[in-house]
Image 1 (cartoon, rainbow, N blue to C red):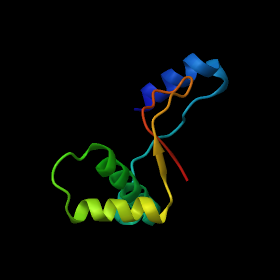
Image 2: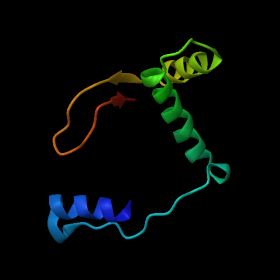
Image 3: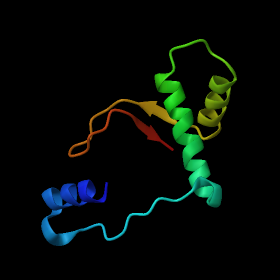
Image 4: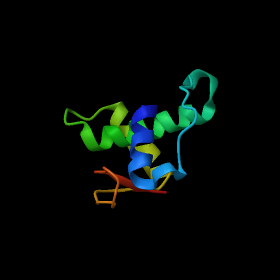
Length: 87
């Protein structure tokens, strides 16, 4: 992942920017990572779940509503993105 990010930086910024360190963090040790996981999971559920709705969908809807996330598709120059959310 670090190599991929640095390759993108080099293509876009030349030698002006480089990622020095990339570390994974256990969500068990970081409330902020737990929050990021919760938000990403809610968005994923809303956008990709095609089966019957259940409690997971209700929880995803509550998270999205509580944070007032506006989900949409768009294009951003230079970024491979299919979904945007605005907080």
